[in-house]
Length: 126
Image 1 (cartoon, helix red, strand yellow):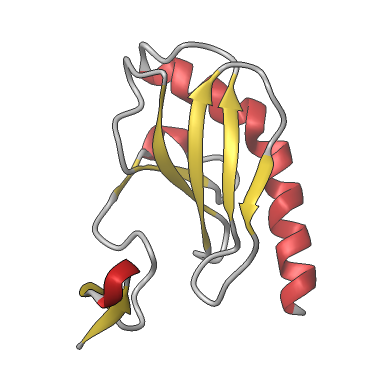
Image 2 (cartoon, rainbow, N blue to C red; image 1 turned 180 degrees about the vertical axis):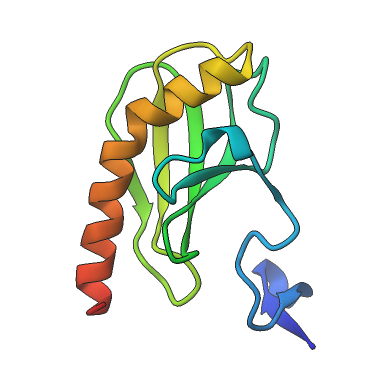
């Protein structure tokens, strides 16, 4: 059974089947796996300056990432909801030409993502 989502103008669209993770069907990048954390790709990382992705925390919970290459702190755009522990703007410090660049960028932002996950868990009472 698919979930329905009403968007602007009263139009209803089908979303992910009810009960599945937000990013069901999207690919995680296994090379980025660090201590139970892994980065997922919505738009391509390699060769791009910005895009959409997600992170999967230990236990399988997910957060959305709006990423760009540049400098800056992790910024919460949307707080925790029933289906994800937030939406965050994240800056990766180095251009991503190879998987190694992606891995290094993920390692750089992972401490901030861990902290955001802990704050979201505290809000949810987990």
